[in-house]
Structures are given as C-alpha cells and as structure tokens.
Length: 300
Ligand SMILES: Nc1ncnc2c1ncn2[C@@H]1O[C@H](COP(=O)(O)OP(=O)(O)O)[C@@H](O)[C@H]1O
Ligand SMILES: [Mg+2]
Image 1 (cartoon, rainbow, N blue to C red):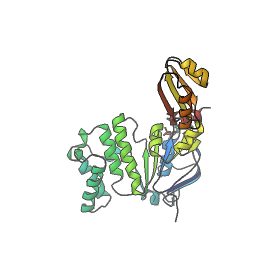
Image 2 (tube, helix red, strand yellow; image 1 turned 180 degrees about the horizontal axis):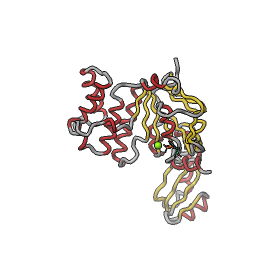
Image 3 (cartoon, rainbow, N blue to C red; image 1 turned 90 degrees about the vertical axis):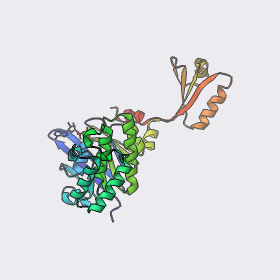
Image 4 (cartoon, rainbow, N blue to C red; image 1 turned 120 degrees about the horizontal axis):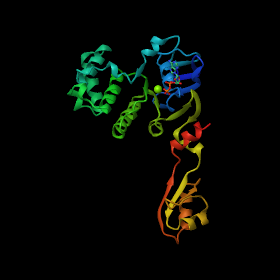
C-alpha cells in the first residue's frame, strides 16, 4: 500500500538554460488537495505536464497512483483525470450529450453513463442547461462542464491547471463549490492557481513556486502565520491620541491605527479598554492574507 497518491523527489525540467521547474518535492495523500501557487511562468504547468506524463522530467522522479511517470506512463494515464481539455467537447451537442459521449468512449455501459451524467450535471449546477447546445453556454458553464467531463470515469488522482483563470467572481465561486465537492470522493487533487484566495479556500497544503523553485510550503494557516502577526485596526477621529497610547502604524487619511496583535481577541479587548474614553468608530482583528504571505515569501 502506497499512502501517497502523488509523490515527487527532486523533480525538475530544463529547457536549454531555463529551469522551468527545479527540485520539486511533494506528497499528496488521497482525499486531499495540494495547491501549486505562483504567478505566470512559475513552473505550475510544467509540473502538471510532467505528472500527467505529457512531458519528461530532466531530473528527479515522480510516482502517481503507484506508478513512475517516466517508466509507466500508460499505467499513470489510466489512473488520472485532467481538466482543461475543452477541446474534447463538441459545440453542436448538448451538455448531456457531451458527457454521454465521453462516458461511452471510456467504455461505460449505457445505463452507467446515463446515471453518471445525471449525477455530474446535478453536482455542477447544469441540470437545466444540460439539454441546451454547448454553443449557448457561458464561460463559467463551459468550465463546469469541462470539469464534469474529466470526472465521468472516477479516477484517484485529478489535476486542475488554473481552473478559474479568466472567470468572473460569481463563476469562480461556483467553480470553488464544484472543486471542493470533488475531494469528498476520496480523490487526490493537484490544483494550480495564481489566486491566493483560491489556494486558501481549496487547498489543504500549498506549495508556492517562483521561477521554478519552491519558495514556501505549508498549510494556508502556516504560510499566513509565517508572514506575521494578526493586527487590530481601529478607526476613530482621535487616531493621533490612540496612536500615542498604543503605538502602531497610523493611516491619517483613513483615521486608522493598526497595532500588532499576537494574542488575537485578547489584544483586541485590551486595546478597546485603553480607548474607552474615546469614540471608536470601528475596530477589527485581521489575519494576514495569503496575499501578504505571497509577497513576503517571493520577495527577493
Ligand atoms: N516548451 C517550452 N520551451 C521552453 N520554455 C518553456 C517551455 N514550457 C515552459 N517554458 C518556460 O518554463 C517556465 C515555466 O513555465 P510554466 O510551467 O508554463 O509556468 P506557469 O504554468 O506557472 O505559468 C517559463 O519561463 C516558460 O517560459
Ligand atoms: Mg500555466
């Protein structure tokens, strides 16, 4: 029994002088989500292409669903699902017909294909749209159908390369719901994204890539903690007086003072007690965002 669905050691890929990916070590357990987070050119797609056997590594190795990607690519392919292949969908068919066709191509029996198609349309909010032609679908609906298409046959390892890039916020939120549901089937999921909020929302662990290298790794909470303490923000007219008493940073335009708050709500209470005689308009306790983490971790 291999307890990891995906495991890599020192995985790398060079293109001439470019190290598209270097020294990637990762482990993904079944039923968990790994987020590969990085800006354009960070090496995310290179990692996904190696793990899905589309590209040979130039160093290190990778095992996916118990098979080495370089030595047993066919066995790996039989165990994985990869989204982002809208090319395999037919504009002149309905959503339902597309899923049925893909199910049949993958040798599901007719009845199984009907059942699975119905389940997936339901799960991705496409039941009503299911009988409309694909050419009438919005960008968000296409992306959800594409995700459904890659799941028509259940596979233990699923790859999503930037599943929400280019979607508007509402369509992105719909996709997040759909993606979160995926993992309840016990699949291991590797998800790449440029959106910090997305990795924060969906991933159990995050690897931050920059220039092909791993610059940070951990749970979303660990990465945020590494960047710094929580802060209390207080807004009031007497912000100068508040800053005199508490220290901290002042933003005169916002009439706001920000104070480091390593003890969270205890600090918030203490601070409010200190300002009891002043007219505090607003007070809040803020976690550092993954955005803060990202910039701190990739700054050179
Ligand atoms: N086939 C290729 N030939 C040459 N360079 C490549 C090739 N594929 C990717 N690269 C380079 O490798 C780096 C990482 O690219 P990529 O993995 O696509 O990043 P991401 O998906 O994070 O945007 C980039 O500098 C890119 O230009
Ligand atoms: Mg990419």
